[in-house]
Image 1: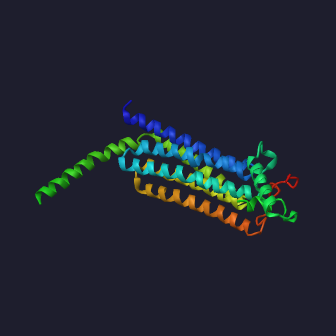
Image 2: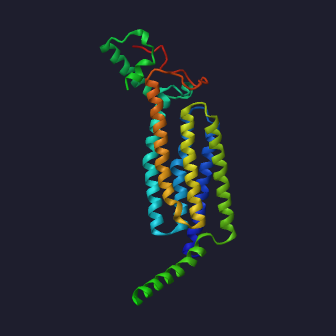
Image 3: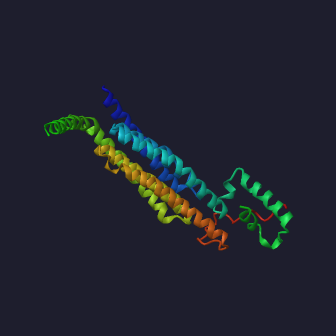
Length: 139
Length: 140
């Protein structure tokens, strides 16, 4: 088998695995219960599945300009998707849309509790503010 | 004049010699067509499921996550299409889509955070996914 034949088969395999990862992300998005676990499912095609598909497409295209474009796409995707996931996860935590019974350990709540207690000690925070007022204002 | 014509002819010959190589290399043979159809079917099923979550998602953040996943699936589909047709015309669209999904998701998340800091809580329907904030028996 020639070099191009090997590249064709490898590209088809890579794209197949990437498409399977996309399908798994779809199933996970449908079945998982809350925002954070859905993010866990949704980041699979964003990083690894898309990288596999782009690698497979590069193995089929085999032109240097196309390879550079695909490399740029992969680089931007790897740069931007963690930022978006961080923002979405932060907003999900702050608005309380998470399954607290499913959490094994919530370190952010400890940190926010310590920050809000220190803030209440120095600022004279009233007790009528409610427990959720402190972590949001603590930033 | 003759020099440029000759150079054009040589370039055309190079392109003509290169084109069948692409044709042979890219998607010749029924096995690759079947593989491309299977991959397209998987991506289509994934896109349908993600779209279902996008429609049904109880909160805006669910929809933002589903929209990110949908953008990723569409990018994979465009990559597959470019590879099968061996046509790199749509590859810059991948770059644009990468930035577009990023800005959309960040904007939605930031908008949620700002609206939450403005004091209007539970703007989406709350389906009992958890009470807002920390539990009230917090020691201080």
